Amino acid sequence: MNIDLVIEILSEAFFGVILILMPILGAGLIVGVVISIFQAATSIQETTLTFFPKIVITAIAIIVALPFIADKMISFTHKIFNLITTVVK
Image 1 (cartoon, rainbow, N blue to C red):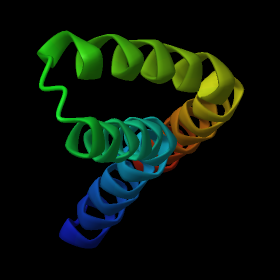
Image 2: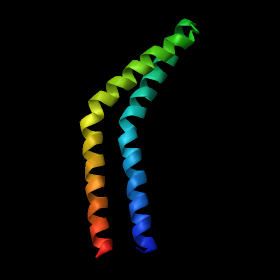
Image 3: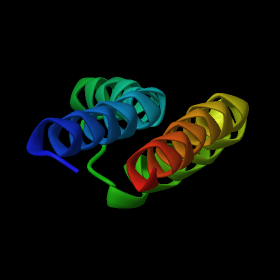
């Protein structure tokens, strides 16, 4: 196993993690900004007002993105297993 193969595996893993987390973090970011604008406009400074909607939207985003996440993780696992059989030979 050479350094180029290790770098390729790690870069693909990091890119996959970023790609998997983008929809979840994006949904939380959008909800956070909308609620912050609402709080600034109405002068309501309640911390639970931001906490509950972010948790709910994040959970919904995870459920919606779950097939995409599973597909990416399964394809990465298949690639790693194929590389293992290649390196062992």
